[in-house]
Length: 539
Image (cartoon, rainbow, N blue to C red; front, side, top):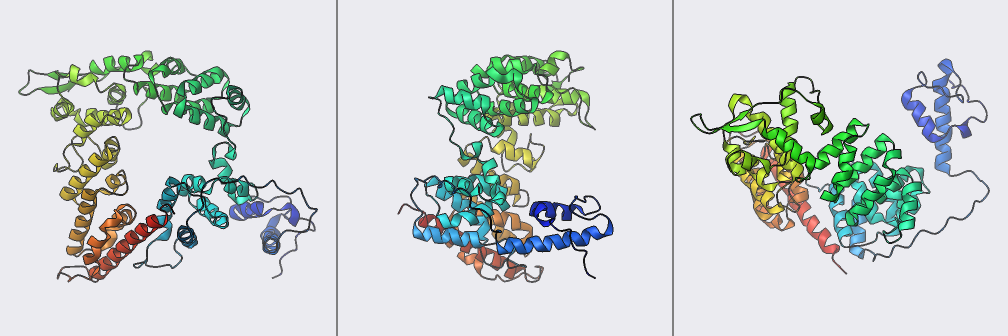
């Protein structure tokens, strides 16, 4: 059946992006004026798409020459060593799922690209110009790559992004579209950009200033606060998390009366992270009135009397009055008060006890989980390592959920407040007791490469799972993390695990071969990571 020809002159008015949009939505839902209406529309759309495809493949139509673009800015960084440049080309040429089916023992090169970019950025190299298109394509496909990829790509990538609509994300991802932010020593330029710049440029300026000159950033924001839109005020206020200091308190107190509920909530959260702020003091008084130790029972016991109302003062200080569905009002209010109160409130309130002793106390009337969950959130918000350790409990505790955490996700947040070595030791102990089935989220917060005790614990647990005769697919997530996070020095210790083991009688058929293949891929990947690091050493 012959398609109805498109009206003359319609193709130039139908850009490729518009054709794709109409094809995705369907001509029944969207029929632009350059398509005939009714049953002829689908065929006409396909005709236009065919013509446009040929034109895109053939190149641009002849047109009058435009002005020559300005040359790209110079990149002052040293070039990559030749071996590292070849490695980058290999990593960028890999495509997810290119082979289909099982991965076998071959490393997943695309999963190594983030690590390679981090090393290259750490050592301050510039990319080969010919690699920039593939690097931008990779960053376009994977948003997790963008910060590191664009930092490595440098100014020439932004120059290219202005030439190709498919790379425009780079201009949006880099604050100010790659334009240089004025230094604090040029107050006129700073003020002009703040008053006249695009929203992304203003956010970038505020964020940059908060790192080294937090007071200047706050003063800029205070000067235009009353004229900003609510959604912009929220974004700007969030930037004050960087370099948060007691001097920010007057401004944040003023923001507690903002018209926007989200702005008020963010201001209250920031103030509660300042333990000496007036809001923190008010929350401490409210929370302390709800929690006490009753010494008259057989053993000292925490008793809780949750608030009976959410008064206007509580609401102004960030307490959300209406609970989510299925949650009681009083427990909802109590959790918010305890979360916002400085953790230093509790030893003095509860008999001079340490965090470990407080967490160990029984809690009357089934308030334990609510109270401990609020303390978990407070420990994460206030970055309090002592309380986090108390709430985590020993890694060898029989219950994997811990004494205070309501979930493994909460435990992962508590771990993030600890020093990297303490984090690794705790997770290693957890794996030694509970195995790998519940450890994936906890491993995700550990520093890379994993410390030696943690790496040994992971490998030993994988070896135990292999000897048990189960398939390795249940541990594919941990195995993928090990490929990216184990210290490459562990590769030689894994060689013995690459052979196909003797399978016990109750083992899953063929499991030994799959495990051998998985360990071969792991050792190959670790050696490849070691080679990558060596290639990126200073020439």
